[in-house]
Image 1 (cartoon, helix red, strand yellow):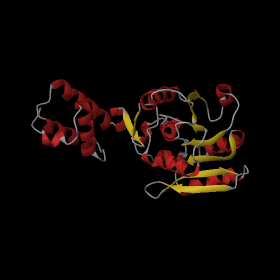
Image 2: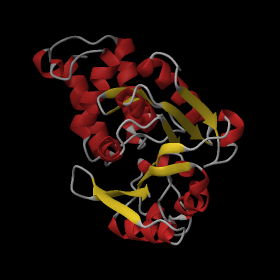
Image 3: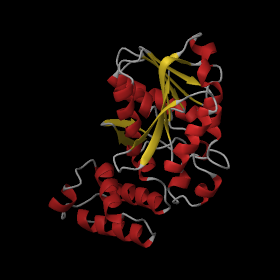
Image 4: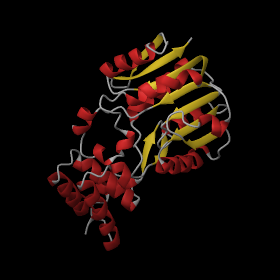
Length: 284
């Protein structure tokens, strides 16, 4: 089969299955399966593709047809310019979350100690370590799969584990048992924040991601409440807490939760699409 014919077949399968971006997805699948640039699909359209490569492409297309996220199929996602490994069972990093990094750079210069709660692939914690190389970064997650993937990304992106701690922990559980007593200059988290109502309306491919990393309780606020309940024991005076949220309404609710715990200084921030993406809490 010629390369462009294979591409057209992939697009056809994905289109019939209801994939919203069949052409782009087919390009990405073929370029990854055959280790070629996407433009080569058009420049070398008459290239003969071997039987094994055809089977590899079609196998990947069949997975995408069933709404398996593209990132799980190709095995990675770029975040802040770094290539993070992903696999099924771990939340896929989103470009929107880069707003958390941008805010951290602006409001917390040179933090010595950083805690990333619910680290997943390690996207936030590893990126902050790259930006603040002299900092000590603790990344925690309750998922064993996430811990394993995070360790792989630390090795691939950071090269070593100096100044990095990766631990299994549910929010603040057992943090001090792992690292000794201490407080953090910066605590960041992209916690599960999808409500039960919103979860039911998620796209099919998003529902393929781990529910433990998405579902934040009936109202979507469970993890914000848990963080607010104990964070004063872990944040230094003049420290910063940066939390991703789902939208503006949720941001207001999160601020109220932390207000009731004695916090008074908040910054609501937006992502690159001008959508409210998170809340920064200043511990004065």
